[in-house]
Length: 123
Image (cartoon, rainbow, N blue to C red; front, side):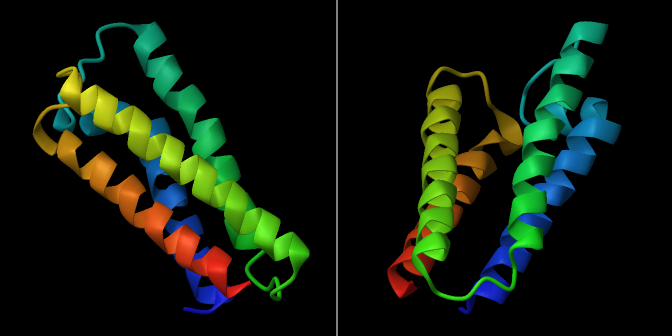
C-alpha cells in the first residue's frame, strides 16, 4: 500500500473513534463493557479524543509524504503508538475491563501495528 492510502486509512480510523468517543461516549463504551457512571468518566472519554484526533490529524496532514528518513520516523512513531494500544487493550481484556466488543480493540491495534510495520519497511 502506498503512503497516501495507508495514512488516509489510518487517519480516518482514528478520526472516527475520536468523534465517537467525544460525541457519543455513552453509546460507545458500553459496547466494550465499560460503564460511564459520572461526568468525570464522560470527560475522560472526551479528553481521550484529543489524542485520537491528534493522531488522525498527523496521519491525514502527512498523507503526501514521500519515502524518506522523515517518513521512516513517522511510521516508526505510528508503530510504537499502535503497539502500545495493542498491549494496553490486551491487558484490559485479560483483566476483564473490556468485555463484549472489547476484543476488537486488541485486534484493531494489532492490525494497525502490522500495517505500520509493513509501511515502515517500505521507506
